[in-house]
Structure formats: C-alpha cells, structure tokens
Image 1 (cartoon, rainbow, N blue to C red):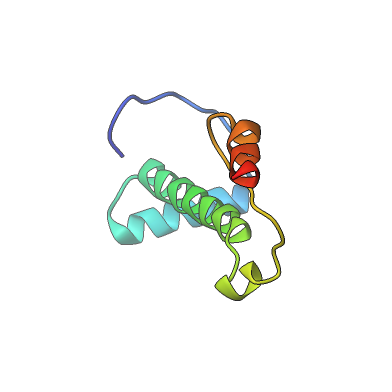
Image 2: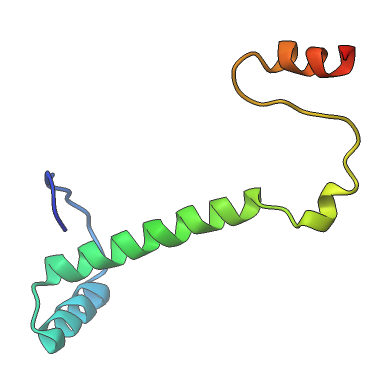
Length: 84
C-alpha cells in the first residue's frame, strides 16, 4: 500500500497468526502485506455493502409521492417547486 503509514498493534489468536505466516510464506510476501491486503479488501467490501443499502430499484421510485430536494437550501428549493 502507498502513502503515509502508521503502526497498529493488535493481538490475534496464535492459530490465526500461524495461518497468516504460512499464507504469506506460500505467496513469498511479508505477513504484514497479507494483513494490509485483508484489511483493504474488508474495507472495500464494507463500503460496498453500505452503498448497496442506499441504492433502490427504479421501480421503487413509482411509489414515491411528492418531491424532495437535497443540498443547498433544500426547504427553500422544495417550496419553490410547489409554488410554481
């Protein structure tokens, strides 16, 4: 991984540490790199899950009633739409 680095200490079960070391040795990379990859992939997955929860199908939009404005002064923008 690129960029600024910080040191993080975390205690893990011995069996997990052994598995990480074995996996890293099989790939010919440092165990720290394996941990970085696992953390990065986990974070990507978590962010994708959060994004997926915010998405809705287009067919769901048909059920909406009214207009919602986001950003800026949403209340003022919404009132302007209804006043037209």
